[in-house]
Length: 359
Image (cartoon, rainbow, N blue to C red; front, side):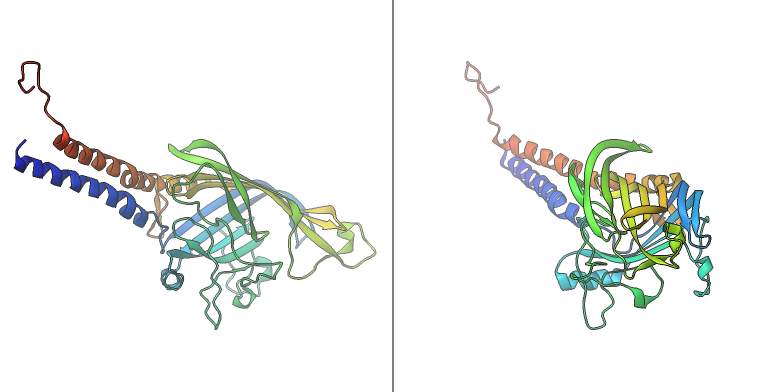
């Protein structure tokens, strides 16, 4: 082998091995981060729910519930907190509105309480951009970039993390997504109602609209919901007709199933089987909510194939996963093989036959 040819092979071998290493250990980690400015909308529907009507003071059955979630990234806050913590984080503001009307909109006048939704939860979460794990960030001195949770639109009602509080100690576990390269294992996933994380277990593989997903299930046993102030109801509703009002407890249990795209860690579909009751002296008296609610077909299709909503591209995790898999696996593997073959050609020695001739 000539010196020039040997030098070319050495150069090609080193180049391909370097490309493999850079792609796998630099480009892939840089790309496998949650987007700071993400915008996402999901719609979940429960077609045969039982709810307690506050207006009518009675249970209503056969109710169609619709829960709409909006997620918006705060780029400025993410950059500020990432710099302060010396780690890559994203900051998302989320709002979930649940009502028995389609395409619910808040009333323009907050005093129109009869037109408020059945349920409303707003949160700000700080997440590790790679793992999806909640990150504590609760600055002082009037800095409002920290995490919070609230069930009203009034800023004064926002609960900030307090390690001594029974209402909100701070976000924990996974909240809006799973880690990139999700494993078939057990994680901890956030429950907004109880405001703490519970184990969520890998169950199986499945396919949604041609996309391979991992199915995880979380079982939250019945327990009381922490309340900011006593919950009072007319005594006649809980078997105490002689009392104008009595303090009651609110209980909650849930079985949550999530379908996760494993490369990106994105939630493609979610389903919850919730039961909330009103209990008196530890005994259930009324059904507050009983529903099996899950992402509608349009949300699942958008998450898989992608769609544009309000001129913003959302979802499309099938193509995003394919791109990351290409960059994180096939390109490093292909270039590494090319590098090994090039370097192997240099060290390969010619064999001589029995007559002494080179073969």
